[in-house]
Amino acid sequence: MSKKNKRKAAATEAAASKYYSKPFNVFAIFWVSILALISALPFLLVLSGSFTDNTAILTYGYQLIPPQFSLEAYRIVFRAPEVLLRAYGVTIFITVVGTVTSVFLTSMAAYVLHRKDFKHRNIFALIFFFTTIFSGGLVPFFLLYTSLGLQNNILALIFPHLIGFINIVIMRTFFTSLPAAIGESGKIDGANDFTIYFRLYLPMAIPGLATIGLFTALAYWNEWYNAMLFISDERLYPLQYLLHRILNAARFATTLAQRTGTTMAAMPTESLKLAMLMVTIGPVVFLFPFIQRFFIRGLTIGAVKG
Image (cartoon, rainbow, N blue to C red; front, top):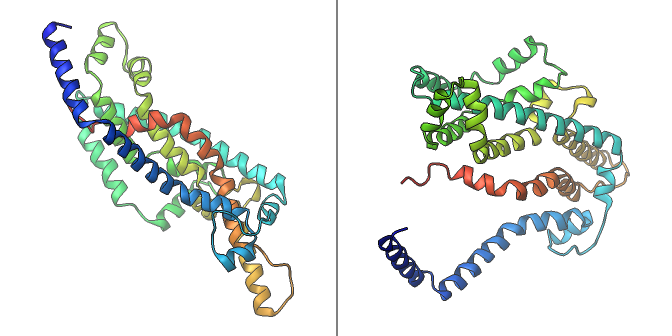
């Protein structure tokens, strides 16, 4: 670095220090801490409510400290552990397989659409965009999957989330931000398009892949709607749909007992909902910190130009 550039950098640093003084840093840390606490409050309320007696919730509402501690909701959730573990296995399977396949297909489509030498790229981008905004609707969707023989087939839980136009846009923007000389250097060395895609572009696209991978994994992890449409075999129930059925069964039993005057053990419907929520979001909460830095970099793709 030349002396002129060093003096310029020093002047810039001195000017920045005036704006980022110690009082400003203290205020910024305090304000960010308040926002972090506000963001964590809903999670803490859910965690506390899951260990609270259902009667206490109905009487006092949701409290950060359980007024009456109870594990009844978790006892109901884990009453049949083999069923819950099987549902966890189905969810993990569709999440892993679906996410890996989706990231591969999405990134490959984005790579093709970002290539300026592909003259039909705008037409294909329009097709992706048009079919995303104007879908066929529920009835054609159901008829298509049933005609393909996907009822009680785990592929019915994987196919709907394979391609997302927003994810293609994110990856296309990321590939566009990379130097065009990367692909040109690969061609000079005799590499074909697949080699350039796998060996040169994908290793540099990890932040973008992590971003769309997280979006896709969350969609698969929270899958229950397509299971409701196409799955009737209990062995193929994903976790979210299984817990949805458990909660509906508890509500139905409670309502039936109230209407018929039948005496039965009270179902902890409120605490049961919170306990099921903790069971489902636990793995996601522990996974997010490991990919947070890639996720943030991927979201800010194209935000700053220069």
